[in-house]
Image 1 (tube, rainbow, N blue to C red):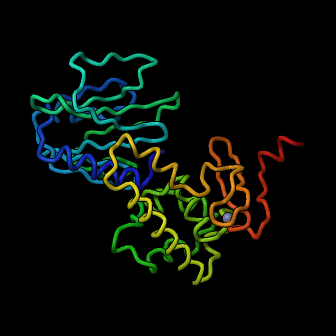
Image 2: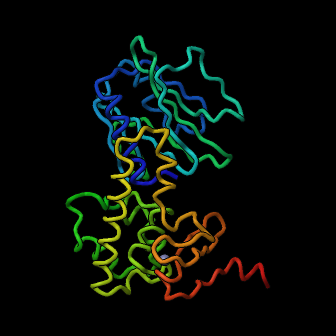
Image 3: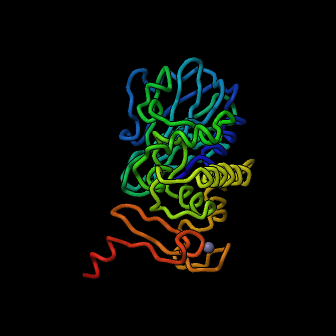
Length: 289
Ligand SMILES: [Zn+2]
C-alpha cells in the first residue's frame, strides 16, 4: 500500500504533468471504485487542473473548483501514459484498470488508476470540497507539516490506551502513516510495537517524534523525482524491517520477526526493539495448540 512518502512523490509527479492541463475525458472502468455521483465525473471534462496535493494517503487533484480525490488503498496504483490507447477501455474481471483520465491535446497523454487483486479498496471521489470525503475530513495532523511539533505529538499520545503500532497507523491520529512505515518508525525509535502509547516517558516521546519525522523525510527524499512506475520498488528497497521476516536486521544483524493478524502482519527486530525477546503471536500460538 502506498503511504505518505509514495503518495507525496506521486503528488509531485502528477503536479508537474497535470497543472495547467485541460482534462479531455474521464472514463470510469471499475464502477465500484467511484464513490460519488454528484457532481458526475464528466463535470471534470473541459476544466483545467489547478494543482495536485496530498492529504494523508489521499491524492487531491484540484480542477477549477472541483476535486478528483483518490485513495489507492492496498493494491491500487497510478500509471502515467505518454500515449493512451485510442480505443475505449473494456471492463472485465481480469482488467486491473479502474479509471482513465485523458488530457486534451495532440499527444493523447494521461493517467490510469489500476487495482490488482480481489480486495477492492481503490476509491475515487469527485467533490466540490475535499472535506466531503469521509476519510479526508477525519484525518489527524500531517507528521510532515512544519507546524507539527513535539508538543503536538505528545498531545496525541497523552491518555492514549492503545499500543503504539495501532496508534501510529490510525489516520484519525496521524495522517499518512500505514502498516509499513509504522514498523519502520518503531524500529528507528527502538520501541516495541506493543508498547502502550500513553505510557511513554517524555524522552521516549521525543525519540519517537524524531524517528517519525526522520523516517518519513528520508523516504520522501528517496522517492523525490521518481516516476510513478519506479516508486514501488524504491519503497521496498528503503524498508529495514517491514516485509523482511527472516532476513537480518540491517542495523544489528538479528533476524527480523513477524506477528500475524487476520489480514495483516507486523515486522520488528527483537534486538533493536524488544530487548531480544520475541513478541507473543496469539494467532500462531492458537494454531499450535
Ligand atoms: Zn535490529
